[in-house]
Amino acid sequence: QVQLVESGGGLVQPGGSLRLSCAASEFALDYYAIGWFRQAPGKEREGVSCISSSDGSTYYADSVKGRFTISIDNAKSTVNLQMTMLKPEDTAVYYCATGCTVLAVHYWGKGTLVTVSS
Image (cartoon, rainbow, N blue to C red; front, side, top):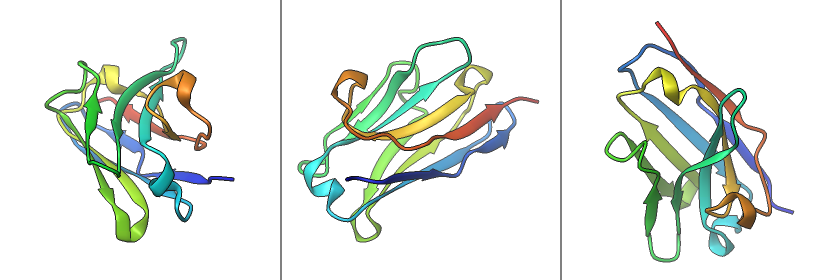
């Protein structure tokens, strides 16, 4: 059983930054790519970014390219999502999960709320 715990959400003004962290249970990063997803009220859950620990390859949705950066801290078994130049449309519950697409996910975290508002 893989456990994923998100942290770092909160309220931020447009143009601001936040850093989300996903703490994964031991060995999870050895077996799974880790993705960040988000779900805004009334909308479907969507993929935001993904990273593979095996080769360091990354993926970003077009809507966040150039603003968000995903990274792995293997020593802490943590995957981070640095979010900059935040927009109101980035407001959502952000989840980390094992996999890069919704259909491929086996394990989900419980999510952390990000609100971008003035």
